[in-house]
Image 1 (cartoon, helix red, strand yellow):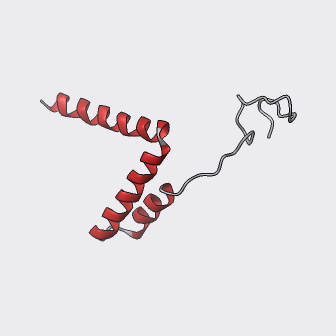
Image 2 (cartoon, rainbow, N blue to C red; image 1 turned 90 degrees about the vertical axis):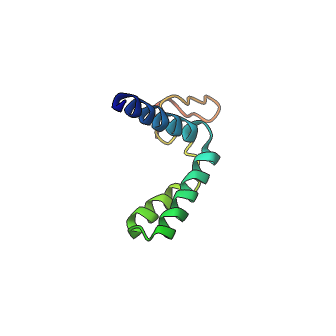
Length: 81
């Protein structure tokens, strides 16, 4: 019984992680909802701040450290910053 609950929790965490990675808008909406719930519950300000920060869209980095984006037209080489 306990093993089944633990496996279900691990599968749920993995599903949430990959949903956020593959569908960022859904992930941001989830973090925004979590921030609102934490704010309503009176959770510590640090937790609410973290959830609010995760709900903001991130800027695209381009070749800023990505080793797999070689673009010969602009001169960006893999691993170049």
